[in-house]
Image 1 (spheres, rainbow, N blue to C red):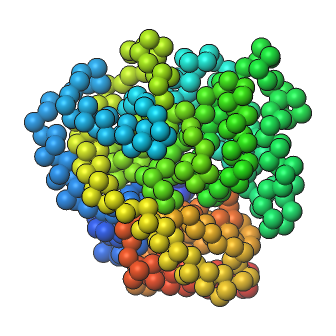
Image 2: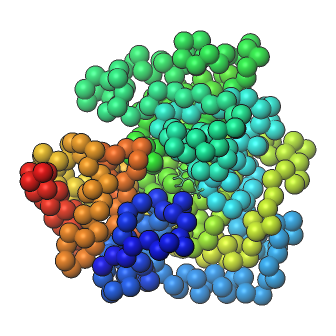
Image 3: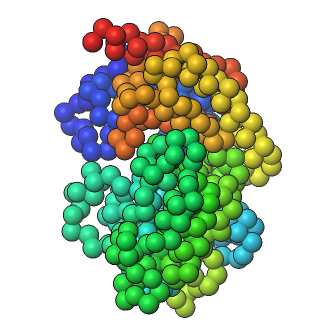
Length: 440
Ligand SMILES: Cc1ncc(COP(=O)(O)O)c(C=O)c1O
């Protein structure tokens, strides 16, 4: 069913460091197949990158869009690139209510670096404020924003000053009144950057704060949604201090949580929006950085500020155009994804009732969900989901930053029948986990 990691494999890319893992050879719909023909329901979907499921038709469409273009480097213009840029600009600009400019980049982390460059070129370099639990990628600069010291320690020489506001996860916040969410005190605390909290001062200080970066739902922290008033306070305070507000929509963008952009949930209006995963359905490396005018005006953010040979590679643009066509053909995506959240919630709540010793809480956010366990069992449960059911495996996510949380983010087109399969496999895996706990 699984195979061990061969000696020639550099394991640095392997997020799940198990000794034995399935080797996948095919994907269709919400399913993956391994070399031995076993079927896996993919409720992880390349960390939420595959909203439309596995669909080779999409690649055929992409190829039609790009097959006549030569392999243009990022310093050449094409009609295909202009079409993709214009469509992404509208997707963000129409929601923010202002025009913007769109830069492309290679992936999520690089897109976040581009966002920071645009912010720094507008207001000057300075400290970056994030919430505890933040994750914005593993590149040199974005590792420094991460709350996990593991991502930072191998690049210890980086000089970015990062200020961490307390976690927005009420379940982990030492000030939380049980189940009551953020208190007035918590909401006010995000306005005290500096002085008490971090030493970074306000508008009169020479130690400037240049950017506030947030995820509408923290992915790697275990699917944590900041209290909306807390987030609005943090954004307002950032603006008062002259910082640029950057929304990392790499995971939450394009309806993962219901609305087109995650920031619509709280009503904040960012200055810069970074999107990536759902723009190419996981089939090409591409991110897009939308910046409100005039932040990325060429007079400030000069040509060549951030370029790389393969940013405008026609294959990625062709995939983006094909995926944008799919989004255009799904005008009711928000309502459908919100309904998906309800359908998942009904099923996951059954697991909480059935396994009160192991499941503390479940929450859904449109096409994403968190299962909070009663202890740090997520890695073991994730492993059991792959193997416990003889008929079908289930792929879910668990992270080192939140070892008691299972993250779920299946293709947004997942059917009710497949949600039932997901729930059954989770149920079986929880039972196995309980048996093992009892016998150990
Ligand atoms: C919220 C968020 N930001 C940034 C990233 C980094 O993107 P990439 O892995 O494409 O560099 C991710 C990837 O999981 C993410 O979920």
